[in-house]
Image (cartoon, rainbow, N blue to C red; front, side, top):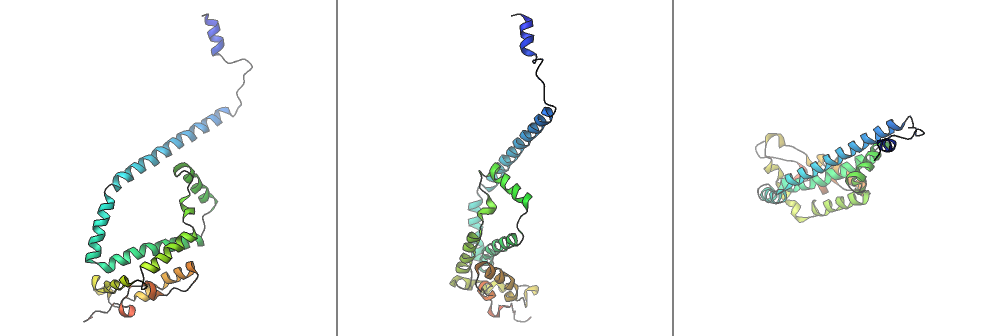
Length: 205
């Protein structure tokens, strides 16, 4: 093949002109593509590490939960109830201070890129958190007979600093959050440990 023909095909047309912004746009697209690949790689690596770290965790958690329930039943019940209390507090805090435009945009991008369009924040809507709150009241409160085990929390945490601790006072803010979320009055007595009088009183103190 004639070399002139090859050069003619390899050289751009004399009438072809690049737009002045073309290199800038091409560079931005390249950076965006590199960022996307890096984000996907980082997310994939984090997922793999989480799976490795969580391998066998379910069995370990079941074992240690059994140990905690056997040795410190009051603490274990309060620990489990505390997870629901924290979920209610987080939701109300987010509701009182909703995310801004940039934060919502970030959440939306992350949901599309990493979670196939599922927004984990919006999934925790009011009805969902209300269901958690009602479950806590039904299963982890004075409404459930097993809650009487929490009366032993003072003995399980027996130490000088615990003497005189007023659990009813401690749980008043928690009860106020549940009342706000559910739209009905929830008393501190309903959520606090079943300690007689609500206070830790040790003989000899």
